[in-house]
Length: 415
Picture (cartoon, one colour):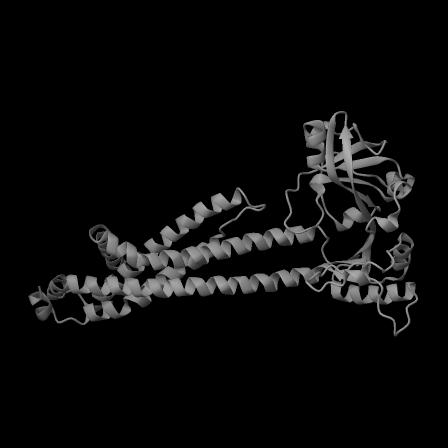
């Protein structure tokens, strides 16, 4: 054990000496390692953080859920909006029929939305999402109430003008989020009593449900003010535990075709949008981005490996007489080999540490401007330093082997 620690210490001291004596040469040689590790950690950390944020945003659509809508959510450059706009809008009566017929669905909710400007005395907030929902909505879309309470079953049935407002709405209209409960907000000459404020959610990347800037009211109240057909209605259906959303989607297509009385030759005049399919698309997109990041990092690491190998060849030549003396006083060839391999690995780790520091600085800068925080996961750091060690061993194996095989007499004579 002491022998191993001695080899490690000697290798570490030689690596530090190389850094002190030949600063510019070492820096230029390790630059490729630094850039490679910077690319690996930077790409993986950014992609993982972005993927996590998008998955959280997608969860706002409800886990294992299918949306029955006249619009197809897939989008794309050739999106036939002209065909979808002519389709009939989903009706709440259709949701009641689906609830009776579906064997795979559990929670179901009807959802409508529009945008309004809300006021409180002299404070005005424009572009607030006004959502009209049915009771089971919150079973599909989980969110917490920060202050006050949520809509009760009685509130839904009676269609009372009660509202649960978003955190940003409360802050903008009342100064502080907790000041909104029990107050009224106005729009179009109408008033809503605020009974609750939703916990702060944060900004979203994808166009999901922006609860921070929203007002939620019972569907029956919403329908008394607006025409639901013109308010982007949709039916949300969540699968029972253990039921794949794909199976639920196929069942709902059959039920909706029955409701709409479509013949076998007629195409669907609705779309059952499976949220899980969007998550699969996210995985495939980020998989391709990861491959691109690894390709860039791989090129930098190859360049860096040649730079480290060059340092080790020069180092072996400069220390030939020292190697001869060590072998003459009894040092084994394996000890010489391990010392140079470890020195090469230490040099690569130094390059990796510089790359990690640069990524850390970059994450601080980007996290302040992006709508999500970039987090460097411990697993990514372990992976990066494992690459450094492997790269160091590979880069130093030939120079270390040359040093280990030297004849001590000839090595001592070398100047």
